[in-house]
Length: 230
Image 1 (cartoon, rainbow, N blue to C red):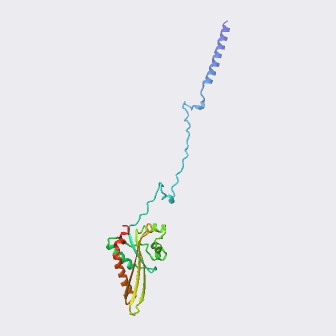
Image 2 (image 1 turned 45 degrees about the vertical axis):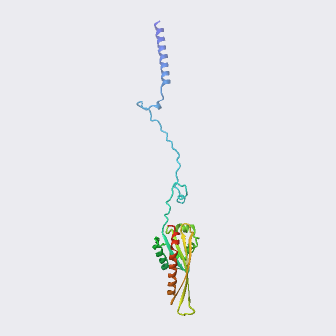
């Protein structure tokens, strides 16, 4: 009797032990999720890269387009008044240019000399185009940096000997004046003067004719000043 009871207890203990191992195996966490010492592994971080569009710089050629975020400063426009007289369309007459400038200064006009007025400006056709009001837009943009309004003149003079007095020379002088806006190229005023002078030489006769023209210009100064756009 005792032997039977003992065998039954041993069988029951064996069954309990097996069940315990099964329960332990089923509920045992995976070792790969734990580090020695019971520390949990560091979670893996995911790096997300956002695609960004690069901003290209605005080309210099587009910096002057209306509405552009980047604009260049406008080129400053000159407020100067200049005078240039050309004789026979071949030579700059600096003396007469200076005399007419002096007359304008007496009227309170600020007159200067432009560095663009050179022999190449004359021979290259720049003067003729500007005088006739037909200068190109690119040229006007450059000229506007040097002067606002130009008083430009074409002087022509012819000499002849007197039929009655062989020693006397007569000079017939014509001066055509144009007041030109460098910004628009428009002829704002056009005046023409013709005078004669007599002397014993070309220089003397020409000087007298020139003085007569200057006196005539003085009578027209108020009109000229009104068209300078000051």
